[in-house]
Length: 149
Image 1 (cartoon, rainbow, N blue to C red):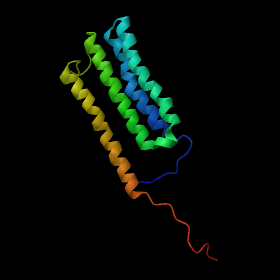
Image 2: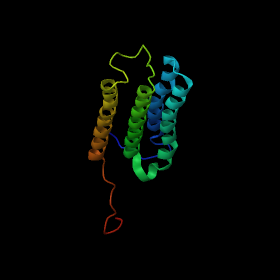
Image 3: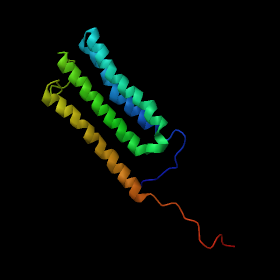
Image 4: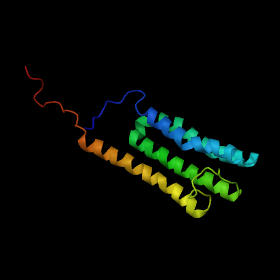
């Protein structure tokens, strides 16, 4: 059974922080593990900065955009930053770590399957949101005749 909790001051912050760290964490480690030169490290960390800056911006606007849209915007920012990160690695001819799966490369096919993960991550978020919206009880409306008693 899906329950709908009342929003609190930090409602949704864990999801936003966790996605921010998850989306950017691998980008922080990759340049160092793969042995990129200083320009590659700086370029790679620039894409990380884009994701990290989205956290306070989205959090400040949370009451206006709502939890679901905030998560989807975070997913969109991470999608763009990941694409930029991989394009930067490809253009600068930077290697990826050898420990990565063989399908993960900076060529078009490798980038496509990495970027395909983002819509696949968005589907369960959307389905959960739809399910919660469907089963959320509407707030009781005041009785036109006033209180009983």
